[in-house]
Length: 105
View (cartoon, rainbow, N blue to C red):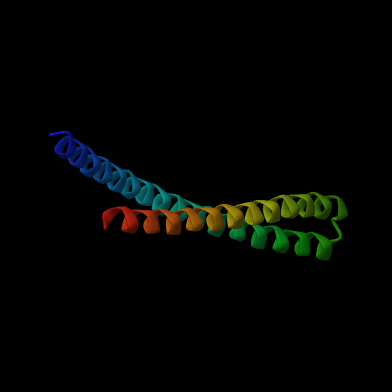
């Protein structure tokens, strides 16, 4: 009787672990999509800032170019942070997929 209970508990724990891994995969996929959206948006801002700096310098507006260059540096930092987040979330996704396959077998 104890063996039957132990086997049943082990099966339930395995099912629960697989379900949790499935939720982790869904959450990581959502995070990756969000990271990609943020990265695209920040890259657009970098391109706009570059164009503004170039235009300001062309028109001789040094103070405005300096402010736009500051914005450009901030947006470039955001892009680097987005890339790190995307890399981390993709790594988590791969890990959770492996865990899900391992627990599902």
